Amino acid sequence: MKNRDYQQVEPRRARRARRKWEVLPGKNRFLCDGRIMMARQSGVLPLTLGLVLVTCGLFFIFDCPFLVQHLSSCVPAVGGVLFVFVLITLLQTSFSDPGILPRATRDEAAHTETQIDSTGNSSYRPPPRTKEVVINQQVVKLKYCFTCKMFRPPRTSHCSLCDNCVERFDHHCPWVGNCVGKRNYRFFYTFIVSLSFLTAFIFGCVTTHLALRAKDGRGLVFALQESPGSAVELVICFFSVWSILGLSGFHTYLVASNLTTNEDIKGSWSGKSGEDVTNPYSHKNICINCCSVLCAPMPPSLIDRRGLLPADESSQTGGVDMEPPALANKSETNVCTQGPKGLLGSAALSPLMNASCPQGKPQTAHPCPDNPSALTSDPSPELPQSCTAHHISKPHSNTSPPHRAKTRSHKCKRATLRIPDDTADSPASPSCSGPDHGSGAKGHRGASFTADQ
Amino acid sequence: MAETHSLQDMRQQASIAAKVFIQRDYTNGTMCQFQTKFPSELETRMDKQQFEETVRILNNLYAEAEKLGSQSFFEGCLACLTAYTVFICMETHYEKVLKKIAKYIQEQNDKIYAPRGLLLTDPIERGLRVITIFEDRSFSR
Image 1 (cartoon, chains in turn purple, blue):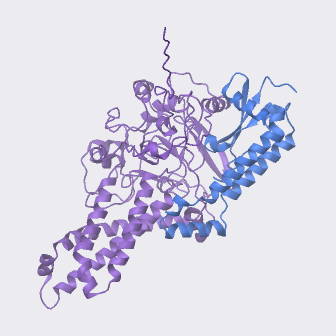
Image 2 (cartoon, chains in turn yellow, red; image 1 turned 60 degrees about the vertical axis):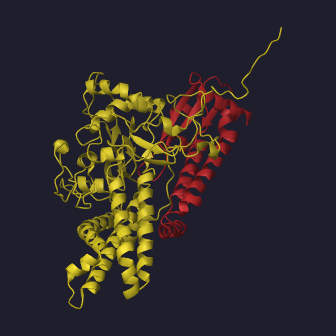
Image 3 (cartoon, one colour; image 1 turned 90 degrees about the horizontal axis):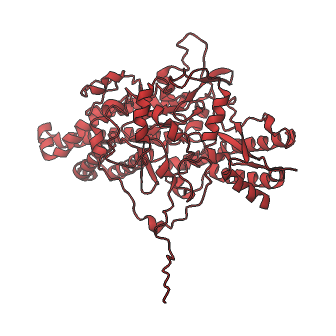
Protein backbone atom coordinates (compact mmCIF):
# COMPACT_ATOMS: atom_id res chain seq x y z
CA MET A 1 0.00 0.00 0.00
CA LYS A 2 1.39 3.23 -1.05
CA ASN A 3 1.53 5.65 1.70
CA ARG A 4 1.88 9.03 0.29
CA ASP A 5 2.15 11.71 2.77
CA TYR A 6 2.07 15.03 1.15
CA GLN A 7 3.58 17.28 3.61
CA GLN A 8 3.59 20.93 3.21
CA VAL A 9 7.14 22.02 3.03
CA GLU A 10 6.10 25.63 3.12
CA PRO A 11 3.16 25.89 5.42
CA ARG A 12 1.08 28.05 3.17
CA ARG A 13 -1.76 28.02 5.54
CA ALA A 14 0.43 29.29 8.31
CA ARG A 15 -0.41 32.75 9.37
CA ARG A 16 1.60 35.43 7.67
CA ALA A 17 3.64 37.23 10.25
CA ARG A 18 1.79 40.38 10.97
CA ARG A 19 3.37 43.72 11.42
CA LYS A 20 2.67 45.82 14.43
CA TRP A 21 0.98 48.57 12.49
CA GLU A 22 -1.83 46.19 11.64
CA VAL A 23 -2.81 45.91 15.27
CA LEU A 24 -2.02 49.42 16.39
CA PRO A 25 -4.94 51.04 18.15
CA GLY A 26 -5.88 54.53 17.23
CA LYS A 27 -7.43 56.04 14.17
CA ASN A 28 -4.52 56.10 11.81
CA ARG A 29 -4.21 55.03 8.24
CA PHE A 30 -1.16 53.08 7.17
CA LEU A 31 0.08 52.80 3.63
CA CYS A 32 2.84 50.85 1.98
CA ASP A 33 2.96 48.21 4.69
CA GLY A 34 3.41 50.65 7.52
CA ARG A 35 6.01 52.90 5.98
CA ILE A 36 3.60 55.77 5.61
CA MET A 37 1.13 56.82 8.26
CA MET A 38 -1.42 59.55 8.50
CA ALA A 39 -4.66 60.31 10.21
CA ARG A 40 -7.61 58.25 9.10
CA GLN A 41 -9.29 61.38 7.93
CA SER A 42 -6.91 63.00 5.57
CA GLY A 43 -8.66 66.30 5.95
CA VAL A 44 -7.98 68.53 3.03
CA LEU A 45 -4.53 67.22 2.23
CA PRO A 46 -5.53 66.48 -1.39
CA LEU A 47 -6.69 70.06 -1.67
CA THR A 48 -3.44 71.38 -0.26
CA LEU A 49 -1.46 69.23 -2.66
CA GLY A 50 -3.70 70.20 -5.53
CA LEU A 51 -3.38 73.90 -4.86
CA VAL A 52 0.40 73.71 -4.60
CA LEU A 53 0.72 71.62 -7.75
CA VAL A 54 -1.73 73.66 -9.79
CA THR A 55 -0.28 77.01 -8.78
CA CYS A 56 3.29 75.93 -9.41
CA GLY A 57 2.33 74.20 -12.62
CA LEU A 58 0.68 77.32 -13.95
CA PHE A 59 3.67 79.34 -12.81
CA PHE A 60 6.14 77.20 -14.71
CA ILE A 61 3.98 77.07 -17.80
CA PHE A 62 2.75 80.64 -18.11
CA ASP A 63 5.12 82.88 -16.22
CA CYS A 64 8.53 81.31 -16.34
CA PRO A 65 9.08 81.41 -20.10
CA PHE A 66 8.31 85.12 -20.22
CA LEU A 67 10.33 85.95 -17.15
CA VAL A 68 13.33 83.95 -18.27
CA GLN A 69 13.29 85.96 -21.45
CA HIS A 70 12.71 89.36 -19.91
CA LEU A 71 14.18 89.04 -16.46
CA SER A 72 16.45 86.21 -15.42
CA SER A 73 16.82 82.47 -15.66
CA CYS A 74 17.08 82.33 -11.88
CA VAL A 75 13.33 82.67 -11.65
CA PRO A 76 12.42 79.08 -12.49
CA ALA A 77 15.44 77.83 -10.54
CA VAL A 78 14.39 79.55 -7.33
CA GLY A 79 10.79 78.59 -7.95
CA GLY A 80 11.80 75.00 -8.51
CA VAL A 81 13.83 74.79 -5.32
CA LEU A 82 11.04 76.28 -3.25
CA PHE A 83 8.48 74.02 -4.86
CA VAL A 84 10.53 70.92 -4.12
CA PHE A 85 11.05 72.07 -0.54
CA VAL A 86 7.36 72.67 -0.03
CA LEU A 87 6.36 69.35 -1.51
CA ILE A 88 8.89 67.28 0.40
CA THR A 89 8.17 68.91 3.74
CA LEU A 90 4.44 68.66 3.20
CA LEU A 91 4.67 64.96 2.50
CA GLN A 92 6.97 64.44 5.46
CA THR A 93 4.59 66.25 7.78
CA SER A 94 1.66 64.26 6.51
CA PHE A 95 3.22 60.86 6.38
CA SER A 96 5.39 60.67 9.46
CA ASP A 97 4.67 59.66 12.99
CA PRO A 98 3.97 62.89 14.89
CA GLY A 99 5.20 61.43 18.16
CA ILE A 100 2.51 58.97 19.07
CA LEU A 101 2.86 57.41 22.49
CA PRO A 102 2.04 53.74 22.48
CA ARG A 103 -0.71 52.83 24.90
CA ALA A 104 0.12 51.33 28.24
CA THR A 105 0.24 47.56 28.49
CA ARG A 106 -2.26 45.76 30.68
CA ASP A 107 0.25 45.35 33.46
CA GLU A 108 1.29 48.95 33.43
CA ALA A 109 -2.31 50.09 33.45
CA ALA A 110 -3.07 47.80 36.36
CA HIS A 111 -0.03 49.07 38.20
CA THR A 112 -1.08 52.67 37.64
CA GLU A 113 -4.60 51.86 38.79
CA THR A 114 -3.37 50.42 42.05
CA GLN A 115 -1.54 53.63 42.70
CA ILE A 116 -4.58 55.77 42.21
CA ASP A 117 -7.16 56.06 44.90
CA SER A 118 -10.32 55.12 43.20
CA THR A 119 -13.50 55.19 45.16
CA GLY A 120 -15.95 55.23 42.28
CA ASN A 121 -17.76 52.14 41.15
CA SER A 122 -17.68 50.84 37.64
CA SER A 123 -20.93 52.33 36.50
CA TYR A 124 -19.71 55.82 36.15
CA ARG A 125 -16.54 57.38 35.03
CA PRO A 126 -14.58 58.83 37.89
CA PRO A 127 -13.43 62.41 37.76
CA PRO A 128 -10.24 63.10 35.86
CA ARG A 129 -7.19 61.87 37.65
CA THR A 130 -4.26 64.19 37.82
CA LYS A 131 -0.80 64.02 39.19
CA GLU A 132 1.24 67.05 39.98
CA VAL A 133 4.88 67.38 39.20
CA VAL A 134 7.20 70.30 39.64
CA ILE A 135 9.14 71.20 36.54
CA ASN A 136 11.62 74.05 36.82
CA GLN A 137 9.79 75.47 39.85
CA GLN A 138 6.48 75.36 38.04
CA VAL A 139 3.68 73.05 39.08
CA VAL A 140 2.45 71.06 36.11
CA LYS A 141 -0.58 68.80 36.23
CA LEU A 142 -0.28 65.49 34.45
CA LYS A 143 -3.64 64.18 33.39
CA TYR A 144 -4.61 60.55 33.20
CA CYS A 145 -5.63 59.40 29.76
CA PHE A 146 -8.51 56.95 29.98
CA THR A 147 -7.92 55.73 26.47
CA CYS A 148 -4.23 55.12 26.70
CA LYS A 149 -4.41 54.12 30.35
CA MET A 150 -1.50 56.20 31.51
CA PHE A 151 -0.63 59.55 32.92
CA ARG A 152 0.27 61.70 30.01
CA PRO A 153 3.79 63.07 30.06
CA PRO A 154 4.03 66.87 30.16
CA ARG A 155 3.02 68.58 26.91
CA THR A 156 1.36 65.43 25.66
CA SER A 157 -2.22 65.61 24.56
CA HIS A 158 -4.70 63.10 23.26
CA CYS A 159 -5.92 63.84 19.79
CA SER A 160 -9.48 62.66 19.47
CA LEU A 161 -9.31 62.61 15.69
CA CYS A 162 -6.39 60.23 15.65
CA ASP A 163 -7.26 58.67 19.00
CA ASN A 164 -3.66 58.77 20.11
CA CYS A 165 -1.66 60.56 22.72
CA VAL A 166 0.90 62.65 20.90
CA GLU A 167 4.00 64.01 22.53
CA ARG A 168 4.47 67.75 22.47
CA PHE A 169 1.10 67.99 20.80
CA ASP A 170 0.78 71.14 18.76
CA HIS A 171 -2.46 70.72 16.86
CA HIS A 172 -4.19 68.45 14.42
CA CYS A 173 -3.79 70.03 11.03
CA PRO A 174 -6.44 69.18 8.43
CA TRP A 175 -4.35 70.79 5.71
CA VAL A 176 -1.70 68.14 6.13
CA GLY A 177 -4.06 65.44 7.30
CA ASN A 178 -2.06 64.55 10.39
CA CYS A 179 -1.29 65.67 13.90
CA VAL A 180 1.63 68.00 14.39
CA GLY A 181 3.69 66.91 17.35
CA LYS A 182 7.18 66.42 18.61
CA ARG A 183 8.51 64.45 15.66
CA ASN A 184 7.07 66.33 12.76
CA TYR A 185 6.85 69.88 14.05
CA ARG A 186 10.09 70.82 12.31
CA PHE A 187 8.75 69.45 9.02
CA PHE A 188 5.56 71.41 9.51
CA TYR A 189 7.41 74.60 10.33
CA THR A 190 9.71 74.24 7.33
CA PHE A 191 6.66 73.56 5.21
CA ILE A 192 4.80 76.72 6.18
CA VAL A 193 7.89 78.89 6.00
CA SER A 194 8.88 77.61 2.58
CA LEU A 195 5.27 77.86 1.46
CA SER A 196 5.23 81.51 2.54
CA PHE A 197 8.33 82.14 0.50
CA LEU A 198 6.92 80.22 -2.45
CA THR A 199 3.60 82.03 -2.35
CA ALA A 200 5.22 85.42 -1.99
CA PHE A 201 7.72 84.58 -4.73
CA ILE A 202 5.03 83.44 -7.17
CA PHE A 203 2.89 86.43 -6.32
CA GLY A 204 5.80 88.74 -6.98
CA CYS A 205 6.74 87.01 -10.21
CA VAL A 206 3.18 87.01 -11.52
CA THR A 207 2.79 90.67 -10.71
CA THR A 208 6.05 91.46 -12.46
CA HIS A 209 5.04 89.35 -15.43
CA LEU A 210 1.70 91.06 -15.81
CA ALA A 211 3.23 94.47 -15.28
CA LEU A 212 5.82 93.83 -17.99
CA ARG A 213 3.16 92.61 -20.39
CA ALA A 214 0.87 95.51 -19.62
CA LYS A 215 3.40 98.23 -20.03
CA ASP A 216 3.53 100.57 -22.97
CA GLY A 217 -0.12 101.27 -22.49
CA ARG A 218 -1.36 97.83 -23.45
CA GLY A 219 -3.27 97.42 -20.22
CA LEU A 220 -3.85 94.72 -17.66
CA VAL A 221 -6.73 93.12 -19.52
CA PHE A 222 -4.48 92.56 -22.52
CA ALA A 223 -1.85 91.02 -20.27
CA LEU A 224 -4.39 88.70 -18.64
CA GLN A 225 -5.68 87.64 -22.00
CA GLU A 226 -2.21 86.72 -23.11
CA SER A 227 -1.50 84.80 -19.95
CA PRO A 228 -4.73 83.49 -18.44
CA GLY A 229 -2.97 81.14 -16.06
CA SER A 230 -1.47 84.10 -14.32
CA ALA A 231 -4.92 85.29 -13.34
CA VAL A 232 -5.60 82.07 -11.51
CA GLU A 233 -2.24 82.22 -9.79
CA LEU A 234 -2.82 85.81 -8.82
CA VAL A 235 -6.08 85.01 -7.14
CA ILE A 236 -4.75 81.98 -5.32
CA CYS A 237 -1.59 83.69 -4.17
CA PHE A 238 -3.27 86.91 -3.20
CA PHE A 239 -5.62 85.17 -0.84
CA SER A 240 -3.08 82.66 0.44
CA VAL A 241 -0.12 84.84 1.10
CA TRP A 242 -1.63 86.75 4.03
CA SER A 243 -2.86 83.71 5.88
CA ILE A 244 0.27 81.69 5.26
CA LEU A 245 2.53 84.54 6.23
CA GLY A 246 0.45 85.04 9.32
CA LEU A 247 0.65 81.38 10.20
CA SER A 248 4.41 81.36 9.71
CA GLY A 249 4.75 84.40 11.90
CA PHE A 250 2.63 82.82 14.58
CA HIS A 251 4.65 79.62 14.56
CA THR A 252 7.89 81.56 14.56
CA TYR A 253 6.70 83.19 17.76
CA LEU A 254 5.82 79.76 19.16
CA VAL A 255 9.22 78.35 18.25
CA ALA A 256 11.02 81.32 19.76
CA SER A 257 9.13 80.93 23.03
CA ASN A 258 9.12 77.12 23.00
CA LEU A 259 5.34 76.95 23.12
CA THR A 260 2.87 74.74 21.37
CA THR A 261 -0.31 75.92 19.68
CA ASN A 262 -2.21 73.87 22.22
CA GLU A 263 -0.58 75.66 25.15
CA ASP A 264 -0.94 79.04 23.54
CA ILE A 265 -4.63 78.58 22.85
CA LYS A 266 -5.33 77.23 26.31
CA GLY A 267 -3.21 79.95 27.85
CA SER A 268 -1.35 77.43 29.97
CA TRP A 269 1.58 79.70 30.64
CA SER A 270 0.18 83.12 30.03
CA GLY A 271 -0.94 83.66 33.58
CA LYS A 272 -4.56 84.19 32.64
CA SER A 273 -5.73 82.89 35.95
CA GLY A 274 -3.73 85.53 37.69
CA GLU A 275 -1.11 83.18 38.99
CA ASP A 276 2.49 83.79 38.39
CA VAL A 277 3.14 81.20 35.75
CA THR A 278 5.96 80.99 33.31
CA ASN A 279 6.67 78.47 30.63
CA PRO A 280 8.85 75.88 32.38
CA TYR A 281 10.08 74.48 29.11
CA SER A 282 11.48 77.70 27.74
CA HIS A 283 15.22 78.12 27.87
CA LYS A 284 14.69 81.86 28.28
CA ASN A 285 16.77 82.50 25.17
CA ILE A 286 15.31 82.79 21.70
CA CYS A 287 18.20 81.09 19.94
CA ILE A 288 18.29 78.17 22.33
CA ASN A 289 14.53 77.81 22.09
CA CYS A 290 14.70 77.76 18.29
CA CYS A 291 17.51 75.23 18.37
CA SER A 292 15.74 72.99 20.82
CA VAL A 293 12.60 72.92 18.75
CA LEU A 294 14.07 72.75 15.27
CA CYS A 295 17.57 71.37 15.65
CA ALA A 296 17.27 68.96 18.53
CA PRO A 297 18.16 65.35 17.80
CA MET A 298 15.34 63.73 15.94
CA PRO A 299 13.48 61.56 18.43
CA PRO A 300 12.76 57.99 17.39
CA SER A 301 9.31 56.74 16.59
CA LEU A 302 8.00 55.00 19.67
CA ILE A 303 5.57 52.87 17.73
CA ASP A 304 7.47 50.21 15.91
CA ARG A 305 5.09 50.09 12.99
CA ARG A 306 7.09 47.80 10.78
CA GLY A 307 8.22 45.44 13.47
CA LEU A 308 6.85 41.94 13.28
CA LEU A 309 4.46 40.57 15.82
CA PRO A 310 5.49 37.25 17.30
CA ALA A 311 3.61 34.56 15.40
CA ASP A 312 1.85 33.16 18.41
CA GLU A 313 0.75 36.46 19.81
CA SER A 314 -2.30 38.42 19.04
CA SER A 315 -2.47 42.03 19.72
CA GLN A 316 -3.69 41.42 23.21
CA THR A 317 -0.36 40.77 24.78
CA GLY A 318 1.85 43.53 25.94
CA GLY A 319 5.59 43.37 26.12
CA VAL A 320 6.13 42.46 22.53
CA ASP A 321 9.73 41.94 21.68
CA MET A 322 11.34 43.86 18.93
CA GLU A 323 12.15 41.68 16.01
CA PRO A 324 13.94 42.57 12.84
CA PRO A 325 11.58 42.54 9.90
CA ALA A 326 11.91 39.09 8.42
CA LEU A 327 10.08 39.71 5.21
CA ALA A 328 12.18 40.50 2.24
CA ASN A 329 11.45 43.82 0.66
CA LYS A 330 10.29 42.23 -2.51
CA SER A 331 7.45 40.52 -0.81
CA GLU A 332 6.06 43.86 0.21
CA THR A 333 5.83 45.13 -3.32
CA ASN A 334 3.55 47.92 -3.20
CA VAL A 335 1.00 46.92 -0.75
CA CYS A 336 -0.23 50.45 -0.87
CA THR A 337 -3.73 49.47 -0.08
CA GLN A 338 -5.00 52.91 0.35
CA GLY A 339 -5.25 55.26 -2.46
CA PRO A 340 -7.01 58.53 -2.69
CA LYS A 341 -10.20 56.57 -2.34
CA GLY A 342 -11.97 57.81 0.71
CA LEU A 343 -9.70 60.79 1.11
CA LEU A 344 -11.85 63.14 -0.85
CA GLY A 345 -14.96 61.69 0.62
CA SER A 346 -14.02 62.80 4.05
CA ALA A 347 -12.59 66.07 2.87
CA ALA A 348 -15.98 67.64 2.66
CA LEU A 349 -16.93 66.85 6.21
CA SER A 350 -13.59 67.08 7.83
CA PRO A 351 -12.86 70.78 7.42
CA LEU A 352 -15.85 71.51 9.57
CA MET A 353 -14.77 69.21 12.24
CA ASN A 354 -11.08 69.29 12.10
CA ALA A 355 -10.19 72.81 11.35
CA SER A 356 -7.64 73.59 13.90
CA CYS A 357 -5.05 75.51 11.97
CA PRO A 358 -5.85 79.09 12.83
CA GLN A 359 -5.39 80.22 9.32
CA GLY A 360 -5.36 78.61 6.00
CA LYS A 361 -5.95 79.29 2.37
CA PRO A 362 -9.04 81.37 2.57
CA GLN A 363 -10.61 80.48 -0.69
CA THR A 364 -11.56 77.25 0.88
CA ALA A 365 -12.24 79.17 4.03
CA HIS A 366 -12.62 76.53 6.62
CA PRO A 367 -14.04 77.77 9.81
CA CYS A 368 -12.44 76.94 13.06
CA PRO A 369 -15.47 76.08 15.06
CA ASP A 370 -15.28 77.29 18.57
CA ASN A 371 -17.77 74.81 19.82
CA PRO A 372 -18.84 71.34 18.90
CA SER A 373 -22.19 72.44 17.62
CA ALA A 374 -20.54 73.87 14.58
CA LEU A 375 -20.29 70.34 13.29
CA THR A 376 -23.51 70.43 11.39
CA SER A 377 -23.20 73.90 9.98
CA ASP A 378 -22.09 74.56 6.47
CA PRO A 379 -18.66 75.92 5.93
CA SER A 380 -18.69 79.63 6.02
CA PRO A 381 -15.85 81.79 5.00
CA GLU A 382 -15.15 83.25 8.37
CA LEU A 383 -11.70 82.70 9.71
CA PRO A 384 -11.68 83.29 13.39
CA GLN A 385 -8.28 84.33 14.50
CA SER A 386 -7.99 81.98 17.34
CA CYS A 387 -8.92 78.48 16.62
CA THR A 388 -9.74 76.87 19.85
CA ALA A 389 -9.08 73.47 18.42
CA HIS A 390 -11.51 72.14 20.87
CA HIS A 391 -10.79 68.57 20.12
CA ILE A 392 -7.39 69.07 21.54
CA SER A 393 -8.69 71.00 24.45
CA LYS A 394 -10.57 68.01 25.66
CA PRO A 395 -7.81 65.65 26.35
CA HIS A 396 -9.46 63.88 29.20
CA SER A 397 -12.13 61.59 28.04
CA ASN A 398 -13.83 61.60 31.31
CA THR A 399 -17.29 62.58 30.36
CA SER A 400 -18.19 59.88 27.92
CA PRO A 401 -21.27 58.11 29.11
CA PRO A 402 -20.84 54.38 29.58
CA HIS A 403 -23.56 53.34 27.17
CA ARG A 404 -21.74 55.01 24.35
CA ALA A 405 -18.65 53.11 25.24
CA LYS A 406 -20.53 49.85 25.00
CA THR A 407 -21.92 50.53 21.56
CA ARG A 408 -18.51 51.44 20.34
CA SER A 409 -16.82 48.48 21.90
CA HIS A 410 -17.78 46.20 19.06
CA LYS A 411 -16.30 48.55 16.60
CA CYS A 412 -13.02 48.60 18.43
CA LYS A 413 -12.60 44.92 17.93
CA ARG A 414 -12.37 45.27 14.22
CA ALA A 415 -8.94 45.07 12.71
CA THR A 416 -7.14 48.26 12.65
CA LEU A 417 -7.35 51.36 10.89
CA ARG A 418 -6.72 50.79 7.29
CA ILE A 419 -10.16 50.24 6.03
CA PRO A 420 -11.02 53.04 3.68
CA ASP A 421 -14.70 52.49 3.64
CA ASP A 422 -14.87 52.38 7.33
CA THR A 423 -18.37 53.38 8.03
CA ALA A 424 -18.18 52.69 11.67
CA ASP A 425 -17.12 56.20 12.32
CA SER A 426 -20.20 58.22 12.18
CA PRO A 427 -19.76 61.71 10.83
CA ALA A 428 -19.89 62.94 14.33
CA SER A 429 -17.29 60.65 15.55
CA PRO A 430 -13.96 62.18 14.87
CA SER A 431 -14.95 65.62 15.59
CA CYS A 432 -15.19 68.33 17.95
CA SER A 433 -18.33 67.11 19.46
CA GLY A 434 -17.18 63.78 20.52
CA PRO A 435 -13.64 63.39 21.47
CA ASP A 436 -14.69 61.31 24.38
CA HIS A 437 -16.47 58.42 22.84
CA GLY A 438 -13.52 57.31 20.84
CA SER A 439 -11.18 57.52 23.70
CA GLY A 440 -13.51 55.87 26.15
CA ALA A 441 -14.40 52.98 23.97
CA LYS A 442 -11.09 52.01 22.64
CA GLY A 443 -9.52 51.95 25.99
CA HIS A 444 -10.13 48.37 26.83
CA ARG A 445 -8.69 47.14 23.60
CA GLY A 446 -6.08 49.70 23.09
CA ALA A 447 -4.61 49.46 26.50
CA SER A 448 -3.49 45.95 26.02
CA PHE A 449 -1.17 46.60 23.19
CA THR A 450 2.14 48.24 23.27
CA ALA A 451 3.96 48.77 20.08
CA ASP A 452 7.66 48.78 20.33
CA GLN A 453 9.92 51.52 19.18
CA MET B 1 23.66 34.37 28.61
CA ALA B 2 21.71 31.21 29.25
CA GLU B 3 20.23 32.81 32.30
CA THR B 4 19.19 35.77 30.23
CA HIS B 5 17.55 33.50 27.68
CA SER B 6 15.58 31.64 30.26
CA LEU B 7 14.52 34.94 31.70
CA GLN B 8 13.42 36.08 28.25
CA ASP B 9 11.15 33.06 28.17
CA MET B 10 9.96 34.01 31.58
CA ARG B 11 8.54 37.19 30.16
CA GLN B 12 5.96 35.10 28.41
CA GLN B 13 4.97 33.36 31.56
CA ALA B 14 3.39 35.98 33.62
CA SER B 15 2.56 33.57 36.38
CA ILE B 16 6.07 33.25 37.66
CA ALA B 17 7.21 36.72 36.74
CA ALA B 18 6.35 39.74 38.74
CA LYS B 19 6.88 43.10 37.17
CA VAL B 20 8.32 46.16 38.73
CA PHE B 21 7.88 49.44 36.90
CA ILE B 22 10.32 52.29 37.11
CA GLN B 23 8.45 55.38 36.05
CA ARG B 24 9.64 58.45 34.33
CA ASP B 25 10.94 61.40 36.26
CA TYR B 26 9.60 64.67 34.85
CA THR B 27 11.16 67.11 37.27
CA ASN B 28 13.57 68.31 34.60
CA GLY B 29 10.94 68.68 31.95
CA THR B 30 10.17 66.40 29.07
CA MET B 31 13.64 64.90 28.85
CA CYS B 32 13.75 61.17 29.13
CA GLN B 33 14.79 60.47 32.71
CA PHE B 34 13.76 57.67 35.02
CA GLN B 35 13.20 57.73 38.73
CA THR B 36 16.13 56.46 40.71
CA LYS B 37 14.03 55.57 43.74
CA PHE B 38 14.75 51.98 44.70
CA PRO B 39 11.56 49.92 44.49
CA SER B 40 10.70 48.04 47.64
CA GLU B 41 9.98 44.83 45.74
CA LEU B 42 13.64 44.50 44.87
CA GLU B 43 14.95 44.96 48.37
CA THR B 44 15.53 41.29 48.89
CA ARG B 45 17.01 40.78 45.47
CA MET B 46 19.69 43.29 44.90
CA ASP B 47 21.75 46.10 46.18
CA LYS B 48 20.24 49.58 46.18
CA GLN B 49 23.50 51.18 45.01
CA GLN B 50 23.76 48.95 41.99
CA PHE B 51 20.21 49.65 40.96
CA GLU B 52 20.64 53.39 41.33
CA GLU B 53 23.87 53.23 39.37
CA THR B 54 22.13 51.42 36.51
CA VAL B 55 19.32 53.96 36.35
CA ARG B 56 21.74 56.84 36.70
CA ILE B 57 23.81 55.63 33.76
CA LEU B 58 20.69 55.07 31.70
CA ASN B 59 19.58 58.61 32.49
CA ASN B 60 22.96 59.91 31.41
CA LEU B 61 22.74 57.99 28.16
CA TYR B 62 19.29 59.37 27.41
CA ALA B 63 20.50 62.86 28.25
CA GLU B 64 23.34 62.34 25.80
CA ALA B 65 20.86 61.23 23.15
CA GLU B 66 18.77 64.35 23.58
CA LYS B 67 21.62 66.74 24.16
CA LEU B 68 21.49 70.06 22.34
CA GLY B 69 25.09 70.26 21.34
CA SER B 70 26.96 71.52 18.34
CA GLN B 71 26.70 68.11 16.71
CA SER B 72 22.94 68.07 16.92
CA PHE B 73 22.81 71.66 15.77
CA PHE B 74 24.81 70.93 12.62
CA GLU B 75 22.86 67.78 12.02
CA GLY B 76 19.65 69.78 12.33
CA CYS B 77 20.85 72.52 9.97
CA LEU B 78 22.06 70.04 7.39
CA ALA B 79 18.77 68.20 7.60
CA CYS B 80 16.83 71.44 7.17
CA LEU B 81 18.84 72.44 4.11
CA THR B 82 18.14 69.10 2.50
CA ALA B 83 14.45 69.27 3.38
CA TYR B 84 15.05 66.56 5.98
CA THR B 85 15.71 63.96 3.33
CA VAL B 86 18.96 63.02 5.05
CA PHE B 87 16.96 61.23 7.71
CA ILE B 88 16.14 58.60 5.14
CA CYS B 89 19.75 57.62 4.60
CA MET B 90 21.47 58.72 7.78
CA GLU B 91 21.22 57.20 11.20
CA THR B 92 20.33 59.94 13.61
CA HIS B 93 22.32 60.71 16.73
CA TYR B 94 19.43 59.52 18.88
CA GLU B 95 19.31 56.17 17.14
CA LYS B 96 23.03 55.70 17.65
CA VAL B 97 22.68 56.30 21.36
CA LEU B 98 19.67 53.98 21.54
CA LYS B 99 21.88 51.21 20.25
CA LYS B 100 24.38 52.02 22.97
CA ILE B 101 21.60 51.87 25.53
CA ALA B 102 20.42 48.50 24.26
CA LYS B 103 23.94 47.15 24.57
CA TYR B 104 24.31 48.56 28.07
CA ILE B 105 21.06 46.98 29.20
CA GLN B 106 22.08 43.65 27.76
CA GLU B 107 25.38 43.90 29.61
CA GLN B 108 23.68 44.79 32.87
CA ASN B 109 21.29 41.92 32.49
CA ASP B 110 24.09 39.46 31.88
CA LYS B 111 26.33 40.69 34.66
CA ILE B 112 24.08 41.88 37.42
CA TYR B 113 20.40 41.19 36.94
CA ALA B 114 20.18 37.74 35.46
CA PRO B 115 22.26 36.18 38.25
CA ARG B 116 19.65 37.55 40.63
CA GLY B 117 16.65 36.32 38.70
CA LEU B 118 15.79 39.72 37.34
CA LEU B 119 15.47 41.07 33.83
CA LEU B 120 15.59 44.65 32.71
CA THR B 121 13.68 45.53 29.57
CA ASP B 122 14.73 48.27 27.26
CA PRO B 123 12.36 51.20 27.85
CA ILE B 124 12.11 51.81 24.10
CA GLU B 125 9.95 48.69 23.98
CA ARG B 126 7.48 50.48 26.21
CA GLY B 127 7.53 53.78 24.38
CA LEU B 128 10.08 55.21 26.82
CA ARG B 129 7.40 55.26 29.51
CA VAL B 130 8.79 52.80 32.01
CA ILE B 131 11.67 50.48 32.69
CA THR B 132 10.10 47.12 33.38
CA ILE B 133 11.98 44.73 35.64
CA PHE B 134 10.80 41.16 35.45
CA GLU B 135 11.25 39.29 38.66
CA ASP B 136 11.47 35.55 38.50
CA ARG B 137 9.52 34.40 41.50
CA SER B 138 10.70 30.84 41.15
CA PHE B 139 14.33 31.91 41.30
CA SER B 140 16.11 31.06 44.46
CA ARG B 141 19.66 32.03 45.27
